[in-house]
Structure formats: structure tokens, C-alpha cells
Image (cartoon, rainbow over all chains, first blue to last red; front, side, top):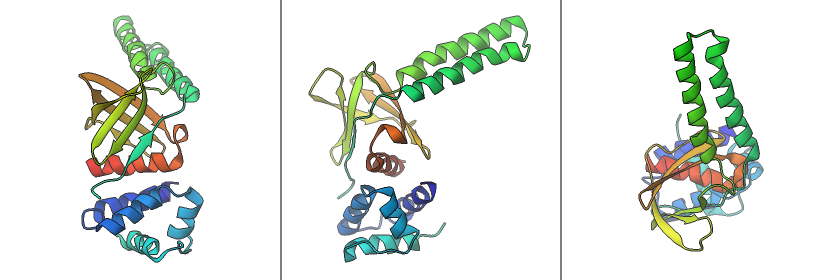
Amino acid sequence: MKELDVLLARWIDQGWAGAGEERRRAFAWLLEQPDPDIADWLLGGARPPEAVRAEIIDDILRCRP
Amino acid sequence: MTSFAVDLEPAASPRLAFVALAVHVAAAASPWVARVPGGLAIALTMASLAALASSLAAVPGPHHRMSALRIDASGCRVRLRGTQSWQRATIAPGSTALADIAFLDIRCEGRRLTWLLTRQAVPAGSFRGLKARLRLSC
């Protein structure tokens, strides 16, 4: 999904360099998840199961266009 | 964690090969449709047909020399078809990813290997990882 690609790319540009190990691992985990789940978390307001994984979602959604 | 691993072992892409063939045939025919003068039309047609070979060579399938690619913290490695060992490789700057297709320009043992990958050719997570990895390399 193009919207997901845009959001993920934005975090790579704005968030990766300053991210700690845990946040980077959470992002790598996110990349492996099915499209519908990522869409639910990034576009649908749902929350992933663990707090550390919810933080990467919040981080991605905070990135500016 | 400076990076994350990406493993690619793409399936054969006969549809992509057909699209590449159609695009090149259309390009080869277009100078004649547009009534371009003879010499120039021949040159343009020959160029289109010559480029077809390199386009088809980049489509994953049993003809391709590269069967798998792995990118991780230790770098990039490829497995050549018919072998079990991994060779060190580098991703050339010309590699790029668009929404549903990625072009990989790989250098391995002095050879240039290219892959044209559609999103459908690899698992969704691998394609997303590849796109992220290419973006980080920019």
C-alpha cells in the first residue's frame, strides 16, 4: 500500500538516524508484519500488542511530511 | 543494530518478462508508426531490441545467474545459481525502488548482475525491507 510506504519512508528519513537499538528493532519487526496489520496500526488507530511496538507506531505517525 | 537483514529469493516472474517484451516491441515499432525517416527508424528499432536482452536478463527466473540475495549488518552477499556458497557483493548506487517494483544493480566478483523485482516476486515483508534498506543506503 502506497500510504504505508510513504509513512515508513518518512520515518527512515526522519527517525532512523536518531533512533536507539530498541526502536530500530521494533521498526525491523514492523517491516515483517502483514500489510493489513500495519495499515490498522498506522492508518486505523489500532495498537500493536506490546508497548515498545506501539512506540514505533507513535514515532512514525509523528513524522512530518 | 545498524541495519536489519533482508533476504530475497524471488520467484520467477513470467508476467514481468511479458510486460518487458511488450514494452520493447512497442518501442521498436513506434518509429515506424510515427513515420520516422528510414535510417533513424532502423537505429531506434535496433536500440529497442538490443535493450530487450538486458531487460529480460534482469527478470528473476531460472535463467538468471543470481538465485538469492542477503543484505545484513555484515554487508551484501549473493548466491549464484547452482552453488550453495555466498559471494560478497555490493549494491551499486543505481539501485532504486518504486511503489511496486525495485531495480537492483549488484556488483559481484567484477560482474554486474541486475534484478528487476516486483512486489509479488518476494514476500511482502522482504520487499518492504528491501525498500527501507535501499532508502537507508541513499
